[in-house]
Length: 160
Ligand SMILES: *[C@@H]1O[C@H](CO)[C@@H](O)[C@H](O)[C@H]1NC(C)=O
Ligand SMILES: *[C@@H]1O[C@H](CO)[C@@H](O)[C@H](O)[C@H]1NC(C)=O
Ligand SMILES: *[C@@H]1O[C@H](CO)[C@@H](O)[C@H](O)[C@H]1NC(C)=O
Image (cartoon, rainbow, N blue to C red):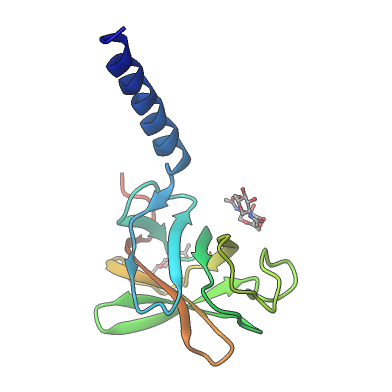
C-alpha cells in the first residue's frame, strides 16, 4: 500500500506532463513588451519553437490568447517586424473588432482568456535575417493592452 502511493502519483505526473506538452505543442516563447493587461500565449501555427522560421511573401496564422483586465470599447492591431533598427509593418487580418474576428467589441474585463485568431501577411521585401515579430493589441485610447515579441528568422525559402 505504502509503495503503491508514490507510483500512482508518479504516473499521473507523467500523464499530466504528456497532456500539457501536447496541448502547448505550438505555443512559442515570447517576451512581454509593455502590456497593460496580460498576454497568455502566442501560437504561430507553423512554428513549434522560437526563433520561428517565416518566409517573405507568405501568410502566417497566429492565435493570441490574453486576459483583458479592463473594459475597452475597441481594439486595434499593430504588427511589425523589427530588423535591427528598422521597423517593417505587417498587415493583420481581420481587424480585432471587425467582421470575421473571434473577438466581439466592446470587450469586457474578464477572467476568461480572449482568443484572437489572425492571419499575418509577411511583406515580400523582408530581407533574410534574424528579426523580432512584435504584435500589439491597442485599446480604445491607443494604449497597449497586450504586446508579444517573438524571435523569428526570415528566409526567402525554407533552408535545406
Ligand atoms: C522574397 O524576397 C526576395 C528578395 O526581395 C524576392 O526575390 C522573392 O520573390 C520574395 N519571395 C516571395 C515569395 O515574395
Ligand atoms: C489561415 O487562416 C485562414 C483564415 O481563417 C484560412 O483561410 C487559411 O486556410 C489558413 N491557413 C493555414 C495554412 O492554415
Ligand atoms: C482559433 O483558432 C483555433 C485553431 O485554428 C481554433 O481551435 C479556435 O477555436 C479558434 N478560436 C476562436 C475563438 O474562434
